[in-house]
Length: 286
Image (cartoon, rainbow, N blue to C red; front, side, top):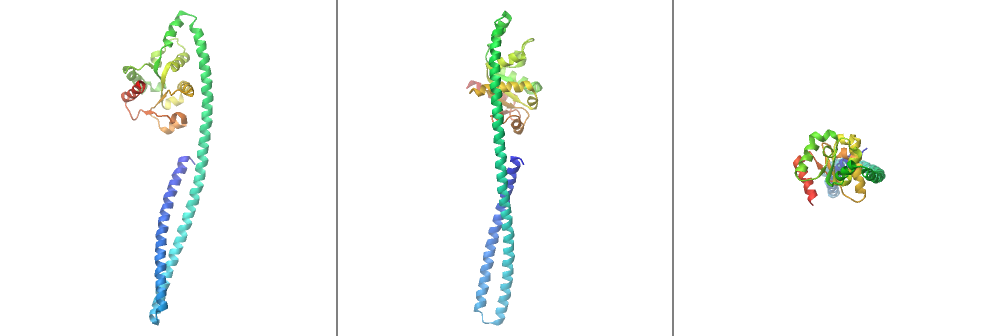
């Protein structure tokens, strides 16, 4: 069973247990009242001298004892039901602890794997930076490109190409209208440019990385590599990732990456493009 399923079952049992406890309180009160009434009849019998009245009181006492027996039986049934549900709840709590421990262990493994990957990416980026520096010194053309590469950006926009038309392109235009320096592949890539080197430069030279998470993003290799590069910077103590959820749920993000699902994100279903770009621009002015 999943954690959510177990939690729902425990909540249902808690309601049942509370209901049975309330019923038992009512039964106990009723039983106590009937026993007092039976004792009262018994005392009357012990004091009564009239045989006819004694017979009638004996009949009343018999009926009262029958009621007491019925209530006692009902109490026994409810008490057993309560005990069964309490035992079931205890078992579910144990199952919940096991499942939560599994999730914690899984998260630790994923974090360890992510850290290893980030370290590998960092080493690769350092190597590529060194190679790029050597390569740029060989010709005037590469030196001219070095001037472009030295440019700093406010944000790097990582996204899947499927989301350009519906969100990313108008969002980037809105950011630029607010004076935000944006690294965006349609603006920064020329014919003949190295895709990998240009993206790596954008990642290094940008203050923040906006990650537009969507179903298409989760299925593409390049956007996920860009995200890995941003995670590598966060390993070094920077807070650079600004997630935007585009037509996806929290569970989908959680299945993709528990780490990024825990970050504060903007959802395109809650805000317009203009409102989202305003939030990003305000963040950059702090």
